[in-house]
Length: 410
Image 1 (cartoon, rainbow, N blue to C red):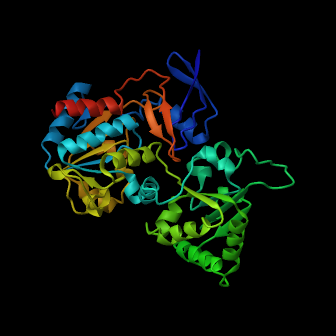
Image 2: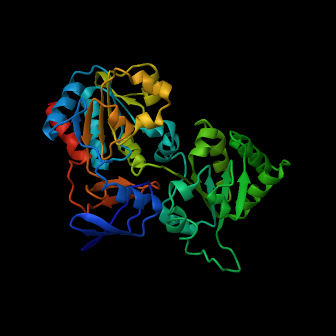
Image 3: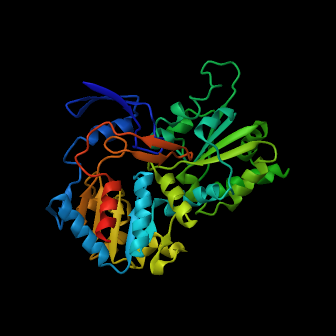
């Protein structure tokens, strides 16, 4: 029996203390992983869930699958590349190069998730910190996020329970946890303070807190929340999709609140990304183009705008070929939008046989990053993490697949 440690890529926590036991190339035991990570790693051994190499629904050799995919891409006039949030930094760099070579459009899930927050962090407009710096905080806030389900080890490994000043039976509390959400989630159930907002009313709550800062009378919840901020000297806000969707990507009032907080405490914001290297994609594309998503390379120039988002590209039927890397569009898109892709050739690169793979003209099964393929990734807090494989892969990695496609396209 062989034993080793690996980085789990089931979510953006990128936990690096996962213990793996294997016998004859099969995982027999997993230590330290959460229920999500364990299911992800054990599930990777189910061959019925893994993607192979397919062309027009038929199993083919890897070379034939690559040739077929290259032909589709080279024949496209308006190719759209989407995904790469579950790919290594090395694969993302190649994906950007591929989009540039094709003169195509490139986007990822951050265009309808955390992209705006990450872009403003990279531009220096929004204060942030690493998980390790959370030890300086005396107030931790999860806003529109429920890590209990999305990132199950986040509290125990990085925030409240991992805080060096946290003592379960302590007489004096040195760090407090607050949750702002539309319902009393599992995370809210263990918080010291819970603030319920109605769906879509986060903006009103923020406005009320700002009014309180200005000395005006406010309601009970806003006053209590302001009281927590006034007692704090260092506050970390983990921003979830609940906040993003409630504000409809207009964070101006939220940024105003952060600005006020900065007058007496040290604030930091960390977006609670889902996919393991979604933040890495934003970093990679920002370094290459100055934008984190929604980019077009048509005509050999870089352009950016909402018209280059996945959703607008699908709505306008702009793409005549779609390359999806590590994303399951057909499970995520509403049926009315997915139907607009009828007749568009789809190529899927993914370790798993997803609904998108089932609807694809070509499928290129990939090795699972972290377990079967190495590279680097960026954790949700911006920290670069190295991935070292512990299992021999049966498939090419996404990095190798994208490199081969580039070579075939000349």
